[in-house]
Length: 80
Image 1 (cartoon, rainbow, N blue to C red):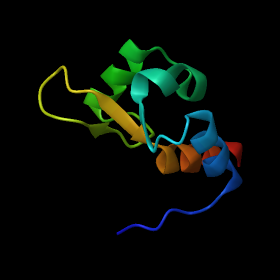
Image 2 (tube, rainbow, N blue to C red; image 1 turned 135 degrees about the vertical axis):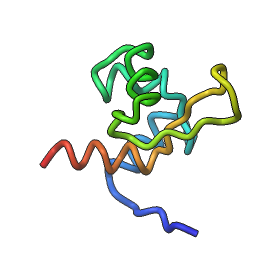
Image 3 (cartoon, one colour; image 1 turned 90 degrees about the horizontal axis):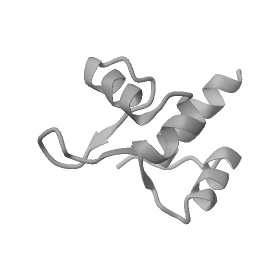
Image 4 (cartoon, rainbow, N blue to C red; image 1 turned 180 degrees about the vertical axis):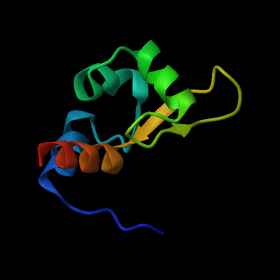
């Protein structure tokens, strides 16, 4: 089991998303990746998305989710 790091970014993102650990890619793509959902989904399918994504099911209509810890690490990495 992976231990969640307690960073300020992680805590703020968790609070911003009402304690949800998994957030839909469609919710975060514009603000944090700078692209619309359609482009983010295409990048995911091409393996070019810089944030790990979890497909919640099989098929094209499966919701794509991002773990808050992965998003926090991405944001902190972009800051450097």
